[in-house]
Length: 278
Image 1: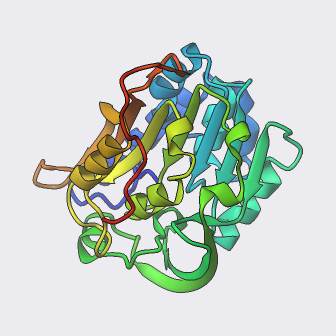
Image 2: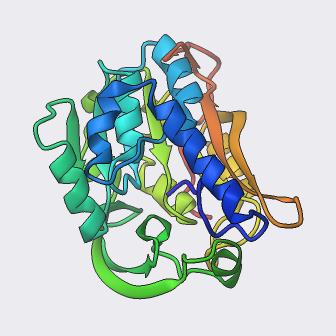
């Protein structure tokens, strides 16, 4: 998951980490609807409130959360954009059970225990000691060294499938947000969304500047792929820096060039289909 508050950042002292977590909890106090989730071990992703508020002002009606873990982002989106329909995906059994329990009576949230990728298959997921750092890609040495406590401790077999196996075009009511937090698997997950990608007004994805997971696509590759699909980079949020001060990763917000407040523009002819031959 998006690792804003990882205690393992080598450059951070324990007291600094404590202050970071306290700051997150202080922000959470503004949102009473999220308090009960704390007793289930789910801390809403308040670091994304700025982006979610901006999307709320566009009238966002659909949020797709890929890499939902225990529901941290879904909970924040459910709070900030209460009228939106949410579709969430998490393949790892433990977090999936927590998510399902938290939202079991919420008609605005539909949950699938599955990862999103180009083809339907069973795959091996590398389970991190911090399960929100687990990935369909092997956990790299740099990830384990900088974010202490995220090394691999087990593997599981999980289901992977394209997004169109679960959603139809009519489910993606614009304006719509596609959020991805999949620990290095972003490019493959985006390919798994190709059939529906043009329907989203925004894509919000965690991207890395350095290889934290083996053979992962880096930020420039994600930007290029989405550019070829008709999206432009709108902003970078929650930038994380390594011990040397250089950027490691951030949350990249992309805007569909054909949208204005979520409504598709009528522009010159252009092929916005996504090439999967990368």
